[in-house]
Image (cartoon, rainbow, N blue to C red):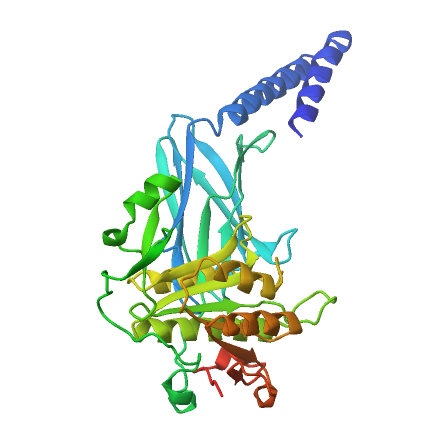
Length: 405
């Protein structure tokens, strides 16, 4: 737009000579000067302009609110008659007040702010966002546009995604009347103790977040070049590991049944929380990689105060795309777990390969169990594997407890 006015101003100045018209010359000169001034203004409008945005918390539960603040600082003498800020937000974490405009990605929306700033001025806008659905979301990118007073020329600044928020699923209790023998994940052979018997070490494994530094195996660490933790006899250390299969549609079909996937997330979270409350070392493994990494999503067994938070971090990221078959996850990860670990598989599709993997571990002396999501009568088969079912429901958002039968 600004280029047109400069071209028109030059044309008026040129035409004023053969026409001998002072008004045309004056008009053209004024428009040309105005255009050049506007171009210079727009060019330097975003120089020394600092943009920041932040959240009051990067972790919330479904239904909770979080404060989102954007701040713009003009650190120069040149005022900004207008600044237009547009940033992407996930629609599942949208402002309570106001609306998001459409974005190219239908799952995201555009939050717009229009403001003006004087010289050496700072301004902030505050929004309340509500987590409507479990997930791991990014904020941004952000585009900032400004220019001259007349809007003839504009300047633009882009900021990539640099903030994230995790919306945790609710931690539901297990229905107390539906716990067979008080342990829905099968019997745990090892007794629970508050203090590990450090006189009976069995070897070492790779260090995992939550392991106490008192049990670092320094000789093994020096030998392997990676931090190692001592592993004690299974009779004194009770490990409970949950492995979640996210596939909800029979292969080779692709896709997902949302209510079964969410029921799996709620069930896995409830079982992990229950086991932690009972004092067990709890681990969670999912047969998919994170959206931002090529690593399988997993939380090695531990029982410190932050273990439930680590589990919730993984559960927030669960998505419908399977990375490896559930049977491969069971056999692959079990090699790194101490023998005597109780392993429970949570899935809506207990296929032949999964059951074969569980049977193989059971024959090797492992304590295993199957939690069948939406299963009806599956546990009445002749399978020696303890099997429990979670009734199917499409109203998973209204659940107040997890029913395990």
